[in-house]
Length: 316
Image (cartoon, rainbow, N blue to C red):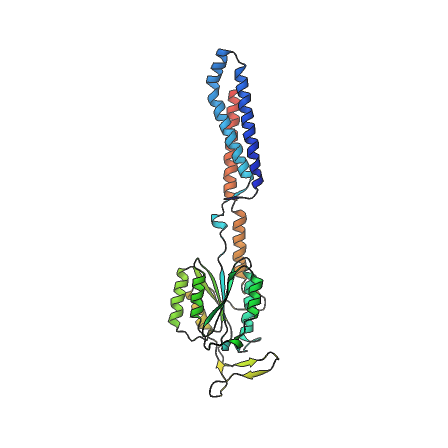
């Protein structure tokens, strides 16, 4: 439990001082009464006076505790779960079947995701024929964005596209649950059974697998765009131009099996708005977490002070 206004705790010193002063005053008042009268009055009134002081003391203490705004942070104050971005850097991500290459769209989408995930720790893993952890979950999203800008599929050494090793890394990094965002075109070399197995393991670990499909089903020739803006076709060993076809349905099946969403990138930058909405709900829970203990302490304090007032009236 934490307190929104802990400085009210100093008021407890005033309550203790007041209780001591009242006790001394009552003792002096009893001492001035005649012997038999004092004993009779003391025998008949002491019990009520004692209960009155107890009620006043506890009532004042609870009133101060209520003013200090207690908050139960065990549920609402839990740290948000981390997230991992899994970005496909295989050669098929160089295909240009939309505005820019698939990878450029993935990079822009990852930037939007980072903006929506503000306040959470986020990590980055890339994959092609093998996976590589670029950064573990970190709260420094600006540094993570800089690392993402350095990723380039043209530097990929391992051919192929296998998301399973990257998903395995994600599950290892998220033992307490979290979110995985997979940016890819779905043209994978893994067997679908392996993906289903990993999706089931993710559900059990409370890890949601969200997918961001890129590209279309129509065949698209692969080209390499050099830094100077020139392009050249990517050819296979027999000199034929390599073509790629995105498999969006396979990615959607992975998201469904993994308890996540299929996220379509748009031009409004709202593709990942549900993460922001989730954060707003969490902040609202934090803001109202202290309402219940505050109300209970205030109600009990008022009840005790009313009882003390009644006892005071009976003793006077």
